[in-house]
Amino acid sequence: MPRNAFYAQSGGVTAVINASAQGVIETARRYSDHIGTVYAGDNGILGALHERLIDTSQELPETIASLRHTPGGAFGSCRYGLKPYEESTAQYERLIEVFKAHNIGYFFYNGGGGSAVQCAQISELGQRMGYPIQAIHIPKTIDNDLPATDCCPGFGSAAKYAAVSIAEAGLDLRSMALTSTKVFILEVMGRNAGWIAAASGLASRDKDHAPHLILFPEVAFDRDGFLAQVRHYVDTCGCCTVVASEGLRNPDGSLLSETRPLHADHGRPQLGGLAPALATLVRSLLGYKTHYAVADYLMRSARHIASKTDVEQSYAVGKAAVELALQGHSGVMVTIERTSEAPYRWCTGTVPVAEVAGKERKLPREYITEDGYYITDAARRYLQPLIEGEEHPPYIDGIPAYAHLRRVLAPQLTDTTYNPDL
Image 1: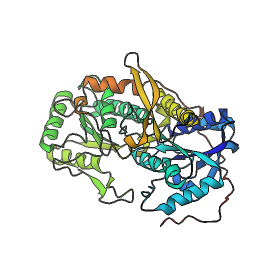
Image 2: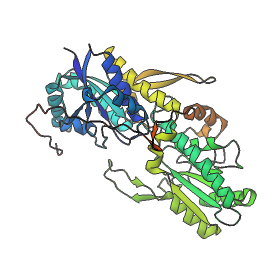
Image 3: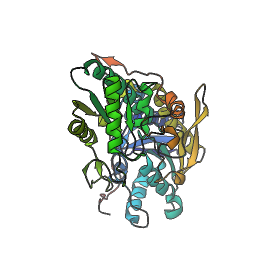
């Protein structure tokens, strides 16, 4: 009999992660002689540990198709890291117990660098514990910081949102600058890598228009230099727009701003508050009226302005994951490979997931201008095709019509209950 599959979403979601889910489910349905039911984890890997498996066979084809234009995580995601196998074999024994009970032989994990680590661990269960399972990592992150792939699904849409938002805000600012606000600061996501901040530079070909300044995590913040730049653009252009990555750091490597020094999210600092801190700095030392905005969740959930390239790539990596599993692959991540620059062309590929797990790709220094405040032509050539194209969702009564799943849970077949302290 065909073995069943388990699909889970992990970490921060994106505007297009559900397109990857669509790719997995629709492709598995086409190969029903080899793959039985696709179960989706209710809130990611926790769905497997708690044996809360959403039976996607209970969803109509048109509902699965509507995942393509639905933001968020349709099945629920989580920030929950499995411990290393040596520290908690009980966690993996629980996974195997659930997988055995539901005849699961395929594991598709849709996430970023942390989920790549866990996917690598699960791919080793066959050798460690004698349970054969094929584990494929499906990449996803708006931060675009996974190595070994040209880009990360989810990034292109967040990048497009950043560029469009600062272009529009810049026009608003310019129209009011003579008698009102002279500086606008947009804080964007990017803990350690400035890819999204860099993409905002696509809004303009010259620094007479927004954004005038971009602040990257890769470039240490120079307070006096920053203030001098702001004054320069107010003097020459009448106003100054700034895009700042939330992970901006001081010369000593410390974060310029964080809301709490310790957060339950894997012990990492919770970022936030950079834009108001910069606005306060500008107001107090330069005297300019200043406004700011924090894109945050709006940036990663803006499906209405998604990049068509990003949507297509997100679906493709889900589809490729199933095809790779059917070819016998395991312990690999699906990648995006750029095969042509002009015209832009791409295809999917693979890389051992161990080469990705726990690693991070930062914005190359050659993508940042020498003064540290803008992007180079090399950055434009890389970024431009990733934001191109529109694939608008259908609208009903002026509001996008997003998917509404039944989320029918499969019957529980085990007698045990998961203990989160294992």
